[in-house]
Length: 144
Image (cartoon, rainbow, N blue to C red; front, side, top):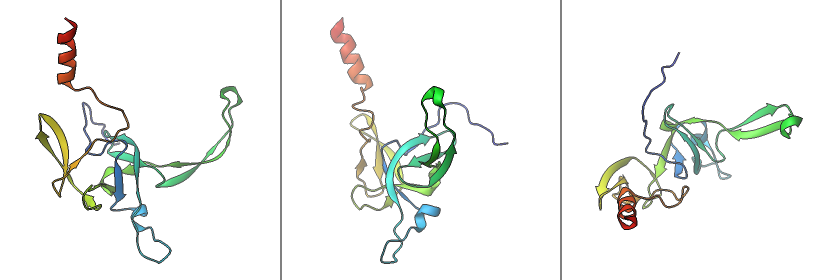
């Protein structure tokens, strides 16, 4: 049985990031000319505890589902994305468009993700604008 980690687990890949496959089934996709084109897609879910991600349109599996009339749920064969190990995908460098590793740096008092090329990888705008600690403190002072 696998042991489950406890506590906070952080991942360098966030929901909404553009990633490319660097290993596995989706790495060996071929285009019409016969050249290997690893699949590129957007991350739709991240499970940092197990180290897995779901990529939009990748690793599609068919699931047979029975209809549940009480919940107004239709039955049939449903295609959905499967979980992929986080080591099989890499973030795309904003400058070169190639797979890259990520490091963290502190710039202007904020922790940001940096690609190998030195370019900052912006946080995806999936959640909207995140309120920083400094903004919350300013708001609290102005309310007093």
